[in-house]
Length: 252
Image 1 (cartoon, rainbow, N blue to C red):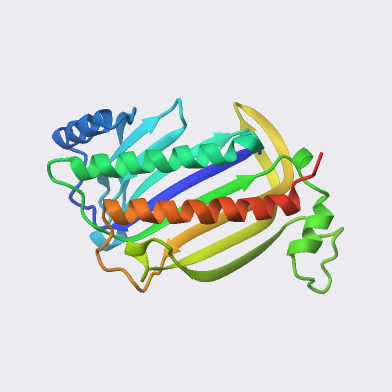
Image 2 (tube, rainbow, N blue to C red):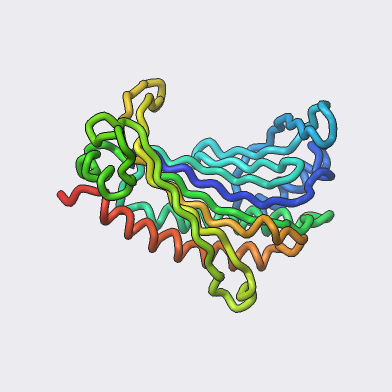
C-alpha cells in the first residue's frame, strides 16, 4: 500500500490537562514505565465554546515510528502514519498500533491525577493503494459506485461510496454497546508527497471507521472499556480489510 493512516480518538472532557511542566513530566514518566518512547511538545487549540483564546495543550511524538499523541480539550487523539506498507504486513501493523494505544491509555490512567472517563470512542483506518497493486479503476468503479446519469466510467475521475450500519460489540462487558460501522471506497486524484518527492495519484482509497453512537455520550469509557473496544474492532477491521482487498487488489 502507498499509505496507511491510523487514528484512535477518545472523546471526553480533558480541559484540565493543560501543558504545564509538572504534568508533562508525570505523564512522560508513566509512558517510559509502559514502554512508550515519545518526546513531549505542545500545540495550541481553540475551542469556540470556551472563547477565542488559544489553549496550550500537551502533545507527544515518536518520529521513528511515525505516531503522535494529542491531549486536546475535548478529545485524546493517537495517530500513526505507515508509508509504503507491504500488504502482508498489514495485520501485524494494526495489532502493533492497538498495543500502543492500550499502553498510552494505561499510562494516562496511571498518572497521579488519573484520566477522566471518556464519552465516545472511535478507531479509523484509511488505506491508499498503489495503482500497480489494484485491478483496473473502471472495474472497481463498476463494483462499488452506483450508476448516475451522465457520469460514465470513462469520464468519472473521482467518486465515493459510503455505507453505514450498526453492530453490537461482542465482548461480554460491552454487550449493550452499539457502534457505527462505517465503510468508504473512493477513487482519488491528486498529488502525494513522499520524502520531498511529489507523485501524481489516481488510485483507490478505503476507509473504515468504528465509533460509538453520538446519542450515548455518558462518561463511561475507562481503560477496560477502551481495551475491549479495540479487541472487538480489531476483528472487524481485519475481516473487512480482507474482504475489500480481495475485490480491489490485483492477483499477481
